[in-house]
Image 1 (cartoon, rainbow, N blue to C red):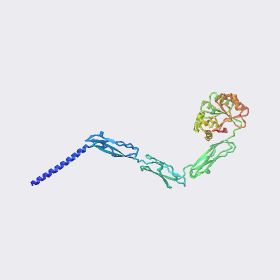
Image 2 (image 1 turned 30 degrees about the vertical axis):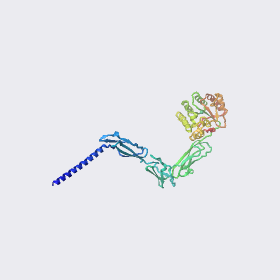
Image 3 (image 1 turned 90 degrees about the vertical axis):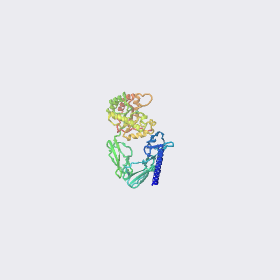
Image 4 (image 1 turned 180 degrees about the vertical axis):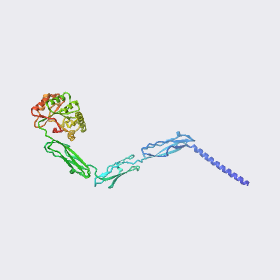
Length: 471
Ligand SMILES: [Zn+2]
Protein backbone atom coordinates (compact mmCIF):
# COMPACT_ATOMS: atom_id res chain seq x y z
CA UNK A 1 0.00 0.00 0.00
CA UNK A 2 2.83 2.40 1.01
CA UNK A 3 4.54 1.84 -2.31
CA UNK A 4 1.37 2.52 -4.20
CA UNK A 5 0.74 5.76 -2.38
CA UNK A 6 4.29 6.93 -3.08
CA UNK A 7 3.92 6.04 -6.75
CA UNK A 8 0.61 7.91 -6.99
CA UNK A 9 2.17 11.02 -5.45
CA UNK A 10 5.09 10.88 -7.86
CA UNK A 11 2.74 10.61 -10.83
CA UNK A 12 0.74 13.58 -9.55
CA UNK A 13 3.89 15.63 -9.11
CA UNK A 14 5.09 14.76 -12.63
CA UNK A 15 1.71 15.71 -14.07
CA UNK A 16 1.65 19.03 -12.26
CA UNK A 17 5.19 19.78 -13.44
CA UNK A 18 4.09 18.93 -16.97
CA UNK A 19 1.14 21.28 -16.70
CA UNK A 20 3.30 23.99 -15.24
CA UNK A 21 5.84 23.72 -18.06
CA UNK A 22 3.05 23.85 -20.62
CA UNK A 23 1.64 26.99 -19.07
CA UNK A 24 5.10 28.48 -18.93
CA UNK A 25 5.64 27.85 -22.66
CA UNK A 26 2.24 29.31 -23.53
CA UNK A 27 2.93 32.28 -21.29
CA UNK A 28 6.27 32.93 -22.93
CA UNK A 29 4.75 32.53 -26.42
CA UNK A 30 1.97 34.92 -25.48
CA UNK A 31 4.56 37.36 -24.21
CA UNK A 32 6.49 37.10 -27.45
CA UNK A 33 3.22 37.50 -29.38
CA UNK A 34 2.45 40.65 -27.47
CA UNK A 35 5.83 42.04 -28.49
CA UNK A 36 4.78 41.93 -32.19
CA UNK A 37 2.99 44.91 -33.63
CA UNK A 38 -0.68 44.49 -34.59
CA UNK A 39 -2.26 46.13 -37.67
CA UNK A 40 -6.02 46.08 -38.15
CA UNK A 41 -7.18 47.49 -41.50
CA UNK A 42 -10.29 49.60 -41.52
CA UNK A 43 -12.56 48.60 -44.39
CA UNK A 44 -12.16 45.53 -46.57
CA UNK A 45 -8.91 43.80 -47.33
CA UNK A 46 -10.01 43.12 -50.92
CA UNK A 47 -11.67 45.98 -52.71
CA UNK A 48 -13.15 46.19 -56.20
CA UNK A 49 -13.21 49.64 -57.79
CA UNK A 50 -14.94 50.71 -60.95
CA UNK A 51 -12.86 52.34 -63.68
CA UNK A 52 -12.30 56.02 -62.79
CA UNK A 53 -13.81 55.54 -59.34
CA UNK A 54 -11.57 57.28 -56.83
CA UNK A 55 -9.78 55.04 -54.28
CA UNK A 56 -10.41 56.19 -50.74
CA UNK A 57 -7.91 55.08 -48.07
CA UNK A 58 -9.93 53.93 -45.05
CA UNK A 59 -6.89 53.71 -42.76
CA UNK A 60 -5.79 51.28 -40.06
CA UNK A 61 -5.20 50.81 -36.34
CA UNK A 62 -1.73 49.67 -35.30
CA UNK A 63 -0.87 48.74 -31.70
CA UNK A 64 1.65 47.03 -29.47
CA UNK A 65 0.96 46.08 -25.86
CA UNK A 66 -2.42 47.65 -26.41
CA UNK A 67 -0.93 51.02 -27.22
CA UNK A 68 -1.42 52.79 -30.57
CA UNK A 69 1.66 52.92 -32.77
CA UNK A 70 -0.04 54.34 -35.86
CA UNK A 71 2.86 56.74 -36.27
CA UNK A 72 5.25 53.80 -36.87
CA UNK A 73 3.27 52.48 -39.84
CA UNK A 74 4.68 53.00 -43.34
CA UNK A 75 2.11 52.84 -46.15
CA UNK A 76 3.27 52.02 -49.68
CA UNK A 77 1.51 51.55 -52.97
CA UNK A 78 -0.70 53.66 -55.25
CA UNK A 79 -4.00 52.92 -56.91
CA UNK A 80 -4.52 54.32 -60.42
CA UNK A 81 -8.20 53.90 -61.16
CA UNK A 82 -7.67 55.36 -64.66
CA UNK A 83 -6.04 52.06 -65.60
CA UNK A 84 -7.55 48.63 -65.16
CA UNK A 85 -5.53 46.18 -63.03
CA UNK A 86 -4.76 44.90 -59.54
CA UNK A 87 -3.03 47.19 -57.07
CA UNK A 88 -1.60 46.57 -53.61
CA UNK A 89 -1.34 48.90 -50.67
CA UNK A 90 1.20 47.66 -48.07
CA UNK A 91 1.02 48.71 -44.40
CA UNK A 92 4.17 47.92 -42.50
CA UNK A 93 5.65 48.41 -39.06
CA UNK A 94 9.35 47.71 -39.62
CA UNK A 95 11.74 45.97 -37.26
CA UNK A 96 12.22 42.57 -35.55
CA UNK A 97 8.75 42.64 -34.02
CA UNK A 98 7.23 44.44 -36.99
CA UNK A 99 4.19 43.54 -39.04
CA UNK A 100 3.12 43.74 -42.66
CA UNK A 101 -0.44 43.76 -43.97
CA UNK A 102 -1.50 44.00 -47.64
CA UNK A 103 -4.72 45.38 -49.04
CA UNK A 104 -5.64 44.37 -52.62
CA UNK A 105 -7.55 46.72 -54.90
CA UNK A 106 -8.84 45.58 -58.27
CA UNK A 107 -9.85 48.25 -60.80
CA UNK A 108 -12.39 46.83 -63.23
CA UNK A 109 -14.57 48.07 -66.11
CA UNK A 110 -18.07 46.74 -65.75
CA UNK A 111 -19.83 49.37 -67.81
CA UNK A 112 -21.45 48.21 -71.02
CA UNK A 113 -20.57 49.83 -74.33
CA UNK A 114 -23.15 52.21 -75.78
CA UNK A 115 -24.58 51.48 -79.23
CA UNK A 116 -25.69 54.90 -80.42
CA UNK A 117 -29.00 54.03 -81.98
CA UNK A 118 -32.62 54.57 -81.00
CA UNK A 119 -33.70 51.07 -80.08
CA UNK A 120 -37.32 52.12 -79.74
CA UNK A 121 -37.49 53.10 -83.41
CA UNK A 122 -38.51 50.46 -85.85
CA UNK A 123 -36.69 50.11 -89.13
CA UNK A 124 -38.98 51.02 -92.00
CA UNK A 125 -37.95 49.44 -95.28
CA UNK A 126 -39.47 49.90 -98.69
CA UNK A 127 -41.81 46.97 -99.41
CA UNK A 128 -39.89 44.25 -101.22
CA UNK A 129 -36.49 45.62 -100.31
CA UNK A 130 -33.71 44.21 -98.14
CA UNK A 131 -32.03 45.65 -95.09
CA UNK A 132 -28.67 47.23 -95.86
CA UNK A 133 -26.18 47.58 -93.02
CA UNK A 134 -25.98 51.06 -91.60
CA UNK A 135 -23.10 52.97 -90.13
CA UNK A 136 -23.65 52.77 -86.39
CA UNK A 137 -21.40 54.33 -83.77
CA UNK A 138 -20.41 52.52 -80.60
CA UNK A 139 -18.74 54.24 -77.67
CA UNK A 140 -17.23 52.52 -74.65
CA UNK A 141 -16.29 54.20 -71.39
CA UNK A 142 -12.89 52.47 -71.42
CA UNK A 143 -12.11 51.49 -75.03
CA UNK A 144 -13.52 54.63 -76.67
CA UNK A 145 -14.76 54.22 -80.25
CA UNK A 146 -15.37 50.53 -80.86
CA UNK A 147 -17.75 50.98 -83.80
CA UNK A 148 -15.65 48.50 -85.77
CA UNK A 149 -16.38 45.77 -83.24
CA UNK A 150 -20.12 46.04 -83.79
CA UNK A 151 -21.72 42.94 -85.26
CA UNK A 152 -24.93 43.55 -87.22
CA UNK A 153 -27.07 40.55 -88.05
CA UNK A 154 -30.43 40.62 -89.74
CA UNK A 155 -33.23 38.40 -90.86
CA UNK A 156 -36.59 39.30 -92.42
CA UNK A 157 -38.04 40.51 -89.16
CA UNK A 158 -35.34 42.14 -87.12
CA UNK A 159 -31.84 43.54 -86.96
CA UNK A 160 -29.57 42.63 -84.06
CA UNK A 161 -26.67 44.84 -83.11
CA UNK A 162 -24.17 43.35 -80.64
CA UNK A 163 -20.83 44.40 -79.32
CA UNK A 164 -18.38 43.43 -76.56
CA UNK A 165 -15.75 45.67 -74.99
CA UNK A 166 -12.24 44.58 -74.00
CA UNK A 167 -13.44 43.73 -70.47
CA UNK A 168 -16.14 41.45 -71.82
CA UNK A 169 -19.11 43.74 -71.17
CA UNK A 170 -21.75 43.08 -73.78
CA UNK A 171 -24.51 45.23 -75.28
CA UNK A 172 -27.21 44.01 -77.58
CA UNK A 173 -29.91 46.02 -79.32
CA UNK A 174 -32.69 44.57 -81.42
CA UNK A 175 -34.82 46.60 -83.80
CA UNK A 176 -37.85 45.28 -85.60
CA UNK A 177 -38.16 45.62 -89.34
CA UNK A 178 -41.41 46.94 -90.79
CA UNK A 179 -41.92 46.85 -94.54
CA UNK A 180 -43.70 50.13 -95.01
CA UNK A 181 -42.86 53.35 -96.83
CA UNK A 182 -43.29 56.15 -94.32
CA UNK A 183 -41.37 58.80 -96.23
CA UNK A 184 -43.04 61.44 -98.35
CA UNK A 185 -41.87 62.02 -101.91
CA UNK A 186 -39.83 65.13 -102.60
CA UNK A 187 -41.47 67.48 -105.06
CA UNK A 188 -39.78 70.49 -106.62
CA UNK A 189 -40.63 73.07 -109.24
CA UNK A 190 -39.19 73.35 -112.68
CA UNK A 191 -38.68 77.05 -113.30
CA UNK A 192 -39.46 79.90 -110.93
CA UNK A 193 -41.56 79.98 -107.78
CA UNK A 194 -43.11 83.26 -108.98
CA UNK A 195 -44.09 83.84 -112.59
CA UNK A 196 -45.10 87.16 -114.08
CA UNK A 197 -47.08 87.06 -117.33
CA UNK A 198 -49.04 89.52 -119.41
CA UNK A 199 -52.76 89.70 -119.89
CA UNK A 200 -54.05 87.76 -122.90
CA UNK A 201 -50.59 86.46 -123.69
CA UNK A 202 -49.58 82.83 -123.31
CA UNK A 203 -48.60 81.03 -120.15
CA UNK A 204 -46.64 77.82 -120.35
CA UNK A 205 -46.41 76.02 -117.07
CA UNK A 206 -42.98 74.50 -116.63
CA UNK A 207 -44.23 71.77 -114.30
CA UNK A 208 -42.61 70.00 -111.40
CA UNK A 209 -40.65 66.85 -110.64
CA UNK A 210 -41.15 64.32 -107.85
CA UNK A 211 -38.87 61.69 -106.42
CA UNK A 212 -39.80 58.99 -103.96
CA UNK A 213 -37.45 57.13 -101.64
CA UNK A 214 -38.99 53.79 -102.63
CA UNK A 215 -40.28 54.34 -106.12
CA UNK A 216 -37.79 56.76 -107.62
CA UNK A 217 -39.02 59.27 -110.19
CA UNK A 218 -42.78 59.58 -109.85
CA UNK A 219 -43.15 62.85 -111.72
CA UNK A 220 -45.76 61.17 -113.92
CA UNK A 221 -47.99 60.85 -110.84
CA UNK A 222 -48.08 64.60 -110.18
CA UNK A 223 -51.55 66.08 -110.21
CA UNK A 224 -51.66 69.75 -111.22
CA UNK A 225 -54.33 72.19 -110.19
CA UNK A 226 -53.89 75.13 -112.52
CA UNK A 227 -56.40 77.96 -112.26
CA UNK A 228 -54.39 80.55 -114.14
CA UNK A 229 -56.70 82.72 -116.22
CA UNK A 230 -54.53 84.51 -118.71
CA UNK A 231 -57.47 86.70 -119.67
CA UNK A 232 -57.94 88.18 -116.25
CA UNK A 233 -55.56 90.31 -114.19
CA UNK A 234 -54.73 88.72 -110.85
CA UNK A 235 -52.58 86.34 -108.86
CA UNK A 236 -53.08 82.60 -109.28
CA UNK A 237 -51.65 79.56 -107.54
CA UNK A 238 -50.69 76.47 -109.47
CA UNK A 239 -50.60 73.53 -107.06
CA UNK A 240 -48.71 70.32 -107.76
CA UNK A 241 -49.52 67.30 -105.61
CA UNK A 242 -48.06 63.82 -105.70
CA UNK A 243 -48.70 60.60 -103.74
CA UNK A 244 -46.57 57.49 -103.65
CA UNK A 245 -48.06 53.97 -103.63
CA UNK A 246 -48.11 53.97 -99.83
CA UNK A 247 -50.14 57.15 -99.71
CA UNK A 248 -47.44 59.57 -98.62
CA UNK A 249 -48.08 62.90 -100.27
CA UNK A 250 -46.22 66.08 -101.01
CA UNK A 251 -47.19 69.30 -102.68
CA UNK A 252 -45.71 72.55 -103.86
CA UNK A 253 -47.17 75.65 -105.45
CA UNK A 254 -46.28 78.37 -107.88
CA UNK A 255 -47.68 81.89 -107.99
CA UNK A 256 -48.55 83.25 -111.40
CA UNK A 257 -49.34 86.92 -111.64
CA UNK A 258 -51.19 88.10 -114.70
CA UNK A 259 -50.87 91.83 -115.37
CA UNK A 260 -51.31 94.31 -118.14
CA UNK A 261 -48.25 94.98 -120.21
CA UNK A 262 -46.71 98.26 -119.10
CA UNK A 263 -47.39 100.95 -121.66
CA UNK A 264 -44.46 102.16 -123.68
CA UNK A 265 -43.72 105.78 -122.94
CA UNK A 266 -44.50 105.44 -119.23
CA UNK A 267 -42.06 107.18 -116.92
CA UNK A 268 -41.24 105.73 -113.51
CA UNK A 269 -39.56 108.33 -111.32
CA UNK A 270 -37.58 106.51 -108.65
CA UNK A 271 -35.74 108.04 -105.70
CA UNK A 272 -33.04 106.18 -103.77
CA UNK A 273 -31.19 106.52 -100.47
CA UNK A 274 -33.69 108.67 -98.53
CA UNK A 275 -35.59 109.86 -96.78
CA UNK A 276 -33.98 113.12 -95.74
CA UNK A 277 -35.34 116.44 -94.44
CA UNK A 278 -34.90 119.34 -96.83
CA UNK A 279 -35.01 117.27 -99.98
CA UNK A 280 -37.49 114.36 -99.64
CA UNK A 281 -40.16 116.61 -98.13
CA UNK A 282 -39.77 119.16 -100.93
CA UNK A 283 -39.86 116.39 -103.56
CA UNK A 284 -43.09 115.11 -101.99
CA UNK A 285 -44.50 118.65 -102.20
CA UNK A 286 -43.67 118.91 -105.93
CA UNK A 287 -45.08 115.45 -106.71
CA UNK A 288 -48.28 116.41 -104.90
CA UNK A 289 -48.58 119.72 -106.73
CA UNK A 290 -47.98 118.02 -110.09
CA UNK A 291 -50.28 115.08 -109.31
CA UNK A 292 -47.55 112.52 -110.01
CA UNK A 293 -46.91 109.26 -108.17
CA UNK A 294 -43.38 107.96 -107.80
CA UNK A 295 -41.34 105.25 -106.09
CA UNK A 296 -38.98 105.70 -103.13
CA UNK A 297 -36.32 103.08 -102.37
CA UNK A 298 -35.74 103.86 -98.71
CA UNK A 299 -33.07 102.94 -96.17
CA UNK A 300 -33.09 102.95 -92.37
CA UNK A 301 -31.91 106.57 -92.35
CA UNK A 302 -34.06 109.68 -92.11
CA UNK A 303 -37.33 110.40 -90.36
CA UNK A 304 -40.22 107.93 -90.13
CA UNK A 305 -42.55 110.85 -90.76
CA UNK A 306 -41.45 111.20 -94.40
CA UNK A 307 -41.94 107.48 -95.07
CA UNK A 308 -45.41 107.80 -93.62
CA UNK A 309 -46.05 110.74 -95.93
CA UNK A 310 -44.85 108.84 -99.02
CA UNK A 311 -47.25 106.04 -98.20
CA UNK A 312 -50.19 108.26 -97.31
CA UNK A 313 -49.77 110.30 -100.48
CA UNK A 314 -49.98 107.20 -102.64
CA UNK A 315 -46.36 106.65 -103.62
CA UNK A 316 -44.70 103.26 -103.57
CA UNK A 317 -42.44 102.76 -100.57
CA UNK A 318 -39.83 100.28 -101.77
CA UNK A 319 -36.72 98.79 -100.16
CA UNK A 320 -33.11 99.68 -100.83
CA UNK A 321 -31.56 97.90 -97.76
CA UNK A 322 -31.22 99.25 -94.24
CA UNK A 323 -27.55 100.17 -94.15
CA UNK A 324 -26.69 100.72 -97.83
CA UNK A 325 -23.23 99.61 -96.74
CA UNK A 326 -21.76 97.45 -99.50
CA UNK A 327 -19.45 95.59 -97.13
CA UNK A 328 -22.37 94.58 -94.94
CA UNK A 329 -25.02 94.08 -97.58
CA UNK A 330 -22.92 91.98 -99.93
CA UNK A 331 -20.96 90.01 -97.30
CA UNK A 332 -23.21 87.00 -97.85
CA UNK A 333 -26.72 86.05 -98.94
CA UNK A 334 -27.81 85.87 -95.30
CA UNK A 335 -26.26 89.22 -94.60
CA UNK A 336 -28.14 90.77 -97.53
CA UNK A 337 -31.49 89.43 -96.38
CA UNK A 338 -30.85 90.44 -92.76
CA UNK A 339 -30.23 93.98 -93.92
CA UNK A 340 -33.23 93.92 -96.26
CA UNK A 341 -35.47 92.52 -93.52
CA UNK A 342 -34.43 95.34 -91.24
CA UNK A 343 -35.66 98.07 -93.61
CA UNK A 344 -38.68 95.96 -94.50
CA UNK A 345 -39.59 95.84 -90.80
CA UNK A 346 -39.17 99.60 -90.57
CA UNK A 347 -41.55 100.23 -93.46
CA UNK A 348 -44.02 97.73 -92.01
CA UNK A 349 -43.88 99.44 -88.63
CA UNK A 350 -44.52 102.87 -90.14
CA UNK A 351 -47.04 101.98 -92.86
CA UNK A 352 -48.37 98.55 -91.91
CA UNK A 353 -47.60 97.24 -95.37
CA UNK A 354 -45.24 94.49 -96.57
CA UNK A 355 -42.92 95.96 -99.16
CA UNK A 356 -41.84 93.52 -101.88
CA UNK A 357 -40.32 95.90 -104.41
CA UNK A 358 -36.59 96.32 -104.10
CA UNK A 359 -33.53 97.88 -105.65
CA UNK A 360 -30.03 96.58 -105.00
CA UNK A 361 -27.55 99.18 -103.75
CA UNK A 362 -25.41 99.89 -106.81
CA UNK A 363 -27.95 98.08 -109.00
CA UNK A 364 -27.89 94.40 -109.95
CA UNK A 365 -25.01 95.08 -112.38
CA UNK A 366 -22.67 96.39 -109.67
CA UNK A 367 -19.16 94.96 -109.48
CA UNK A 368 -18.27 96.40 -106.07
CA UNK A 369 -20.02 93.40 -104.46
CA UNK A 370 -17.24 91.21 -105.88
CA UNK A 371 -14.94 92.72 -103.24
CA UNK A 372 -17.09 91.10 -100.54
CA UNK A 373 -18.50 87.98 -102.13
CA UNK A 374 -17.75 86.58 -105.56
CA UNK A 375 -20.87 85.69 -107.53
CA UNK A 376 -23.32 87.09 -104.98
CA UNK A 377 -25.36 89.15 -107.47
CA UNK A 378 -26.00 86.05 -109.59
CA UNK A 379 -27.38 84.34 -106.49
CA UNK A 380 -29.30 87.33 -105.10
CA UNK A 381 -31.05 88.29 -108.34
CA UNK A 382 -32.55 84.78 -108.47
CA UNK A 383 -33.12 84.42 -104.76
CA UNK A 384 -35.06 87.65 -104.27
CA UNK A 385 -37.50 86.62 -107.01
CA UNK A 386 -37.71 83.17 -105.44
CA UNK A 387 -38.76 84.82 -102.19
CA UNK A 388 -41.51 86.85 -103.82
CA UNK A 389 -39.72 90.15 -104.44
CA UNK A 390 -39.38 92.05 -107.69
CA UNK A 391 -36.26 94.12 -108.24
CA UNK A 392 -35.87 97.16 -110.45
CA UNK A 393 -32.73 98.60 -111.94
CA UNK A 394 -33.03 101.59 -114.29
CA UNK A 395 -32.57 102.44 -117.94
CA UNK A 396 -32.14 106.18 -117.41
CA UNK A 397 -29.70 107.69 -114.94
CA UNK A 398 -30.19 111.28 -113.88
CA UNK A 399 -26.46 111.42 -113.16
CA UNK A 400 -27.10 112.74 -109.65
CA UNK A 401 -24.88 110.20 -107.94
CA UNK A 402 -21.71 110.55 -109.96
CA UNK A 403 -18.50 111.73 -108.34
CA UNK A 404 -16.69 114.94 -109.28
CA UNK A 405 -18.15 118.45 -109.25
CA UNK A 406 -21.83 118.79 -108.34
CA UNK A 407 -24.10 118.95 -111.38
CA UNK A 408 -26.57 121.77 -111.84
CA UNK A 409 -30.33 121.13 -111.79
CA UNK A 410 -30.33 121.88 -115.53
CA UNK A 411 -27.77 119.14 -116.16
CA UNK A 412 -29.88 116.68 -114.18
CA UNK A 413 -32.98 117.64 -116.12
CA UNK A 414 -31.19 117.28 -119.46
CA UNK A 415 -29.75 113.89 -118.50
CA UNK A 416 -33.28 112.63 -117.90
CA UNK A 417 -35.35 114.24 -120.62
CA UNK A 418 -32.83 113.56 -123.35
CA UNK A 419 -33.00 109.85 -122.55
CA UNK A 420 -36.80 109.51 -122.47
CA UNK A 421 -38.23 107.25 -125.16
CA UNK A 422 -41.72 106.47 -126.30
CA UNK A 423 -40.99 102.90 -127.41
CA UNK A 424 -40.24 101.51 -123.96
CA UNK A 425 -40.91 102.12 -120.31
CA UNK A 426 -38.57 104.71 -118.78
CA UNK A 427 -37.16 103.78 -115.38
CA UNK A 428 -35.41 106.90 -114.07
CA UNK A 429 -32.78 106.69 -111.32
CA UNK A 430 -32.66 109.68 -108.99
CA UNK A 431 -31.71 110.34 -105.36
CA UNK A 432 -34.02 112.22 -103.01
CA UNK A 433 -31.06 113.28 -100.88
CA UNK A 434 -29.70 115.65 -103.56
CA UNK A 435 -30.69 119.34 -103.74
CA UNK A 436 -30.03 119.55 -107.50
CA UNK A 437 -32.37 116.62 -108.10
CA UNK A 438 -35.02 118.27 -105.96
CA UNK A 439 -34.52 121.47 -107.98
CA UNK A 440 -34.67 119.67 -111.36
CA UNK A 441 -37.77 117.63 -110.61
CA UNK A 442 -40.52 120.06 -111.58
CA UNK A 443 -38.93 120.75 -114.95
CA UNK A 444 -38.59 117.01 -115.66
CA UNK A 445 -42.25 116.42 -114.88
CA UNK A 446 -43.37 119.42 -116.94
CA UNK A 447 -41.28 118.23 -119.90
CA UNK A 448 -42.78 114.75 -119.66
CA UNK A 449 -46.33 116.04 -119.51
CA UNK A 450 -45.75 118.43 -122.41
CA UNK A 451 -44.36 115.61 -124.53
CA UNK A 452 -47.04 113.01 -123.98
CA UNK A 453 -45.44 110.87 -121.32
CA UNK A 454 -47.37 109.43 -118.41
CA UNK A 455 -45.97 108.99 -114.90
CA UNK A 456 -46.58 105.90 -112.80
CA UNK A 457 -45.32 104.37 -109.60
CA UNK A 458 -43.88 100.86 -109.58
CA UNK A 459 -46.27 98.12 -108.49
CA UNK A 460 -45.97 94.34 -108.46
CA UNK A 461 -47.50 94.44 -111.94
CA UNK A 462 -44.65 96.52 -113.31
CA UNK A 463 -42.25 94.57 -115.49
CA UNK A 464 -38.85 94.21 -113.88
CA UNK A 465 -36.14 96.38 -115.38
CA UNK A 466 -32.95 94.41 -115.10
CA UNK A 467 -29.39 95.25 -115.94
CA UNK A 468 -26.78 92.67 -116.84
CA UNK A 469 -25.43 90.88 -113.79
CA UNK A 470 -21.65 91.18 -113.62
CA UNK A 471 -20.90 89.36 -110.40
ZN1 LIG B 1 -28.42 103.76 -103.45
